[in-house]
Each structure stands twice: as structure tokens, then as C-alpha cells.
Image (tube, rainbow, N blue to C red; front, side, top):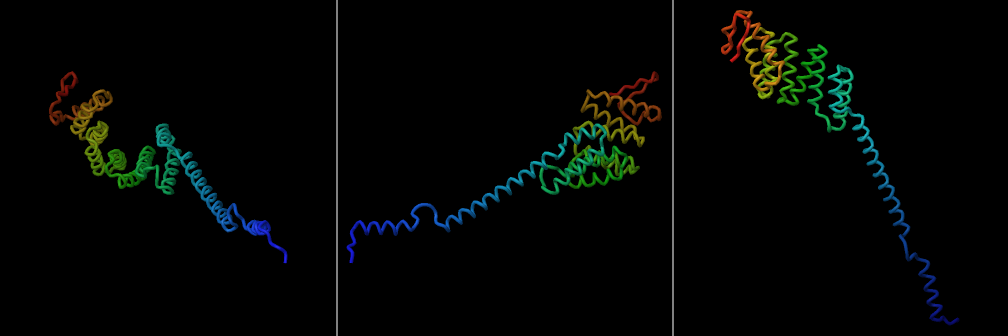
Length: 238
């Protein structure tokens, strides 16, 4: 029997040990790491895809300023398309867009297009979503007035004033309404309040002067205390 030396045992031992990996992951661990890498890559791609979708949605979403410019320029159909796009984005994401504002802008556009019934319906929606917005009541009041529903128009103008009592525009619009329904003393009173709030607005003085002239011509001069009419057609308001 051959003698087994210490070197032979060490060599045999080295050969035996070398047959088992001593560095790096095992085959099972390598598979686990590979699967983890695939999962991580998949999650990264999903996040990137979502980011691109949101970025593209935001990029093409018209800004309120752009929509306002279209409205001011009379490009109503373009503005309505943009509002529809904004509404779709809100329905998908629930963010970035105020639905009350969308309906309010639609109501304003419909009113400018003489689509007063559509305007009332849109503003009903806006008010249901934001019941403290004076502008919506004022715009709806104008639509009701154009439709001949004076009771509802007056109610809306009153509500606009109640919600925003320091804004001269609320009194001006209600003053025009009073003037149109021949409540001239009330019209002069509202125009005077608007002038007190905005004394630099020359259009308010003109509106009050027209109402005063109508009041004088109606022969109901006594209906308005603080106003004096003279034979030379001059008028003094105290």
C-alpha cells in the first residue's frame, strides 16, 4: 500500500476543496439575483412610462391663461375644446384642474354666444361645486335676465353682492339690471355704491348719469333723496 504523505493529503484536500466554489454566489443565489434584477428593471420601466404619460398630459394641457386669451379674443370654440380637454384630464387624474372653474368658464362662454339656457345649466353645475363664488351667480343672473326670468336674475345679482360686497362690479351689474327693469332709483343707488368703491372708474359715473337722466325724464325725481335736478338739465348728487 503506497504511503500517503502529508503533502499528498494536502493535495488531495486541495483538490477536494477546489471542487466546491469558494468565491462568488451559488447557482441558486445567482438565479435569485437575476430574477431580482429583472423585477427591478421592470419596475423602473413602469415608473418611467408613468412619468412620461403624466409629463405628456401636463405638457399638452392648456393653461387657464391660454384659455382666457382665447375667450378674450372671441375664440370660443377653441376655448370650449380646451375646457373639454381639461375636464378629461381631471377625470383621469383628479388633479390640477378645478371642475367648478371649468363649468364656470363654459357658462360664461355660452352666455357670450347667446346660448343662455346652456349657460344657466353650466353655471348651475359650477355653483353646486363652489357655492361661494360670486362670479358664477353674477354670470347666471345675466343669463336669467336674457331669458326673461327676472325673479331669478335678481336673486342671483343679490347673492353676488352678498358674497362679494366690496367689489364694485357686483353693484354695477345689479345696477344695470335695475335700470333694465326700470327700477331707476335702485340703479342709481347701486351705481353710487360702485363709484364709492372705485372712484377712478369713469364708466360708473356715465352709467349713473344715464340712470339719473332716465329718472328725471320719468318724472319720479322725488324717488331718490340726495339728488337735485335743475332747469338747465344739470344734476347734483350729494
